[in-house]
Length: 357
Image (cartoon, rainbow, N blue to C red; front, side, top):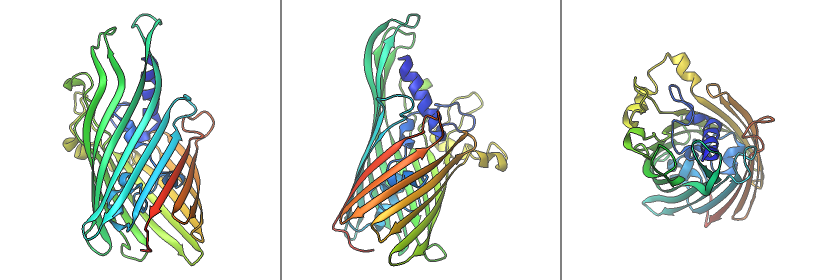
């Protein structure tokens, strides 16, 4: 049990979104919802909300699915936090399908395995048993164009957290499992003001608190706002270069008694309790670039900067596209000893019946 708690705390610290102002690390539940799927986006420093042009748009921005004219499937696997433990891993699977004259539907499954934990007594190191911890979410999305260059999207996800079985050897009685739901909202505008400039906005994980023990101890979901711009600097027959930037902010807040506010209050409260200069420090800034040669091989790089959470790292990536198959790789270089260092993501994508946009 102690290992489970420690791992969850470290996961929270390694996901800078969950260390918002007035919130202690880990005060936002189910932080796995903030793990970025897709090796392509990972290689670009996770600045993807204004691009969202592949199957992972179900996570990054459901509005991005509306511009895609074929069935797409994507799978990703990552050994999560390899510096901490060898039995943590993260999987993501998603698919989208356009319906003529209606819109594009999508389905995504996210799963994180937190490994095997030990049950011990409160005052004794004796191992009383073991259990496995995991969390997962199943999401359905829908995207539709609302103009020649703009689209909106919505997602509904069901969330299940299995942190611990029911135990009776502690003063806290109850089951360490819980369920809830959340909604995602997205907007995408292509060719904003000038050709090849895109704007993307995604408000994710809007939902009720998740309850493990009782309602008084319920934890908020990691409601997160993404706002980003991307620009295709080079668009030639054999060469393409896209630059992207993104700002993220966790919208979680507490009242004067330290109790987490409900989401409909926290979305606004999280912005207005400090001077603007301090509020900006709580933003997370992502920068990325993607270069394609002959629409066959891609090179990617990015930078992730979180001043508030003191998390800064460089990312790299590569991709291959052959016929209907995409292979992508992303790598985080966070420095020696950092839990995220050497985190690698591998993605496989399949595009069926695609035509040029």
